[in-house]
Every structure is written in structure tokens, then in C-alpha cells.
Image: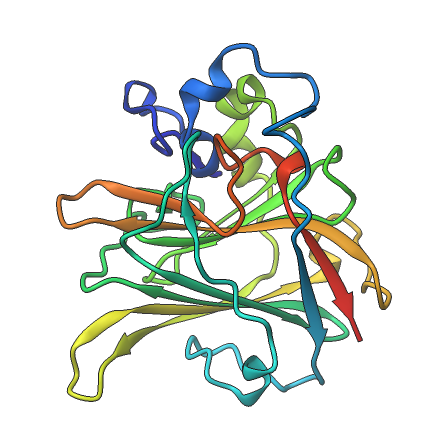
Length: 263
């Protein structure tokens, strides 16, 4: 699940490659609350306005350059995962839109080197470069989804039945292998005019029908969500970051910002 502990921050628990989970294993490992209450567990007040686009306005080719993307708000300023978020070395941009059948996601991930991990679906792609999306269509207290992609266009997708660390650590692989939605994805490279590598990009189309019976949202519908990134630093370590800090691992849905569908 992209909650790796380091898969996101607990090398001693390397067996736990939950990209989001791992980021702050030490923080989640003990005294994990049954509910997120009080600072720093309050829901984020941040709202991303997800704009509707006509069918076919965005082609899933990995370029993130269609005119429709220019109308979408750009998520920037990702911060590192963990208890004390700071600015990142490797910047990320994420945009989300929707049409009548799919949620559309575009990532631009900047790095002078691009290293993938995982060679087949549901491998721990967060051990290398990956872009990640957490989706809570039915609220923070219900099962939710994580969909990740790496520069080689390898997907990791899972239906998370419990955000609790004990459950995640025991079931992350089983949940991922049991959930393989019909997600369309493509990736590409970001280069300068003179051909210098600047990073990589990804586009995904996630059918609403593949999100456990979720229907096409009505205008004004609100989900909880977060976007995240794993970046490979020059020393080979992984920098985990997210748009909205969770002050711990990535699997803290009660801290997520809102995704509001606008038509």
C-alpha cells in the first residue's frame, strides 16, 4: 500500500512495505488512537476543487499537457512525511479532474534521476520513484483506496479495509492482490529544451465504477483524499512527501483534505 514504512520511516520493519504506512511507523506503532481526535489529528480545512471536463478532453498518454489540465488547480508545495514536515528536495505537482465516468489524475515529479522499483502490479513501487493517491469516497471512517504508479507505469492499487497500523502491516499485500481495478495509466519523461532529464510524469483514469460501487459524483459532492510522492535522493534513500501533511504515516484518513467535485 504505498504506506511503506520507510516504506516510510521504519527500516527495522522493512518487511512492511506499505508506502504510506511505513512513513512514520514509529508514530503509528504505539498508542494508535481508535479515532483521530485533537491536534495534530484534526481534518485538514484545505479543499481541492476538482473541475469537470468533457469526455475525451484528457488523453491518458503520460504527458499532462492537454489544455484541460491548465484549468485545474495545481497541488504544489509538498512537505515531507512524518511528525515534523519540512520542505522537500524533489518537487511534485498534482492535478485532478473528472468526467462522467472517471477520476483523472496528472502528476509531474521532478528529479534529475528517475529510478523505478517493482516489475509487476502490486509490487512495492514506493521503494523507488512513485506517485500516489489516497481516495476516501465514503468518508474517512470507511474503507478507502490507494493507487500508485511508478515511472515504468507499474501500478500498485489496493482497497484498504482498515487504516490501523496493525491491520495494515498484516494485510497490505493481500488487500492489494485482491483489488485490481481497470485503471488506465501512462507515464512519460520531463526534459528541458536541450534534452536534460528533469523528471517524469504520469496520468491515470480511475473509473468511478471501480471504487467499490461508487457512482459518478454529483456537483458539490465531497470526498477525502491526499496525494503523495516517493522520490529517490542522490544517496539512494527515499524522500516521502505529501500535499497535506498527516504528521505521521500516510494512512491517517481523518487528517486528509477535501476533494470537492465541481461541474
